[in-house]
Length: 493
Ligand code: NAP
Ligand code: MG
Image (cartoon, rainbow, N blue to C red):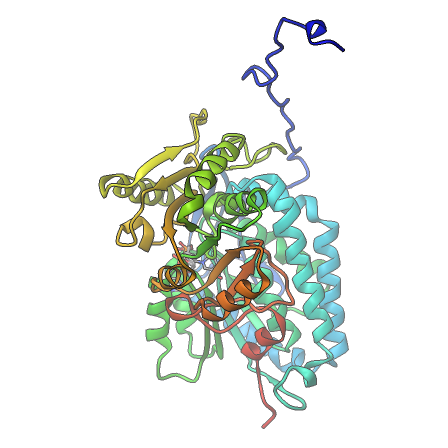
């Protein structure tokens, strides 16, 4: 075709009037009760000394359900049910225990749609993430640990390792079902029984999991779920008949728990906060790196302990990376978490939104340059636009403190030594990312970065076979893989 034949009326292919059609996920697959009791000894029970509160849908601020805030007597009842159940659960043949875990894993798969919708309603995360990441990974944790139940002699603790007893497990709101799976699956596979406290803003998938335990005919008392707030968690962790404490949450609460159990015989694992460096060298495959940066910090609204919240980019490619990044971010869609095209959902709570807002204001006040996605924000609910700060100095608050939201701080480096020094210049040490074409550089960086997980040319990959955990103020102990089993076992006496 000659140039003169080309249509002269330009067709505006990127007109803002070209929009995705709504793709709403049906929510009638879930059946939310108007109020929930506690799940203790295989049954729903009323509280003895607790109270009631409600959980909200953070995208609309509407109440989803009322649930129980367990008091100390409720916690005591749950721990005693777990203690009684431990006597028989720990003596089951390992393959029978494994069978229960396989059954739970399969039921989670069968009810995956229900779990994904409920998680997005209660937490605010996009349905495509709860559907494609949270729920399948939760099922994978049960499958993986089911396989370990009769192979514990090979866990690295010598022949016939023993379970610890009753595990008190306290989890946060960012991956409610997945954190439950990380905790419950290894505990049960190793022959322990559990009392789990979900976060106060996201109790619903844990309560649905209670139903799964019943469906799987899990013996009563092996899994107990006590909903509530921080006081319920504190009462559970402090209970004298608890043998093991497994906590995921903030470094502040983690330190308080460490102080609380110091001097007792309780075994403790703490999975705490992070401020990960995502390091991009000038030889990295740029398109992949830019997608990895986006996934690293904007996945799950940045409510990810191992989020790549500090981008360290080699100085000579800084402008190119930032340009490509903001171009890419401009295509993200913020809005209804139940729409299958949504990339950025709601922030989980008003309190978390305040924290993100305040820290971002501090970033600007301290001199960093702010860019944010231009997009409409729904009138109700808790929302924060994806935000990128450039011209960030290592001393800035936004380069040091965990924001736990969709906010990226961009810093630069010139040499690998400088990248390592800046990446390690944090009280945390949970994760890091390295983007480069050179395998030798990946290996060198991985050895020098003080982080529990180092991703190479990828980010935010989770797999039950791989141990996860931190250095320094990111906590201690590992979850997942063979290493994670040792947190729930002791060598035979
Ligand atoms: P959080 O305030 O520490 O809460 C975590 C859990 O602990 C919640 O169930 C909470 O109950 C409970 N809790 C609060 N005070 C307690 C106390 N004194 N004793 C016992 N339990 C208590 O943390 P969050 O704000 O929910 O979660 C965000 C933090 O978790 C971030 O710092 C993030 O980095 C970290 N995190 C770490 C990992 C990891 O694997 N390393 C994974 C996810 C999140 P309430 O819900 O009622 O407050
Ligand atoms: Mg909620």
